[in-house]
Length: 319
Image (cartoon, rainbow, N blue to C red; front, side, top):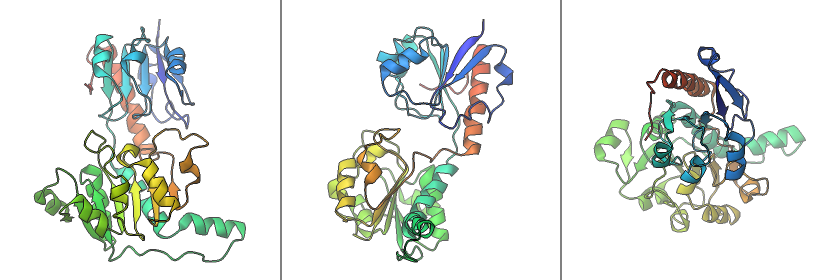
């Protein structure tokens, strides 16, 4: 009898086409779910009879309460090598092996710049006007050359964003709680003396930090108040790093020029969520990791993980 494998949140229905599943087809029956399950009850009911579950990034939480309701589950595979919404202790207690896949830092860097450039040059506004017969040239673009890009975080993604900023001729500074002068020099940017200094002096602020107890709510109302009224905020990291209510207020009141967001407190974003109608906002539905190469990596390595598990030697274990 073949094992049953559920692939969650495959919104584009590409999981079985971007990777070769033939190495496990004779032993595994794959079912793809293209719609998101909004409650634990819905999810438990849908995947309760599956032996293997493939979950996309951190979109679906696997707490003990859910894992305890999945008696057949043997293998849980998450895209990426870090997942903060899986209860690893509960997985172990339930005999569930948890594996990950590699994930490229290139796609989120590219999307960060798509949002930043879109905001700076009013791309969506001008495109909509052109297509609907609106005014010819209604916005005045914000320059990048000679302006300051402030980065909260200078890791794999932040450092790549920094190098693009330097190529545009921007002044680039960075801050994080662990940032050293040596790391800043290595990337070729200026370390800010404090978070407050970085926010107050930057024309564009982009967030590239992992979500943790230290970074949750790192940018709240006091921090947003430090930004110039001409400044833009870009967040392709995690929504909870920024106080969402405070950001909405800043956008509605025009206290910052705009924001570019790819991450939200609830995903998929409900149809009546206030972020959908916020002014001065350029938003995308968490596309940072969504690229063909990344999906090929995710699902190709998912097949590898299933093969390895079936051979009794699981790979890329997460704990």
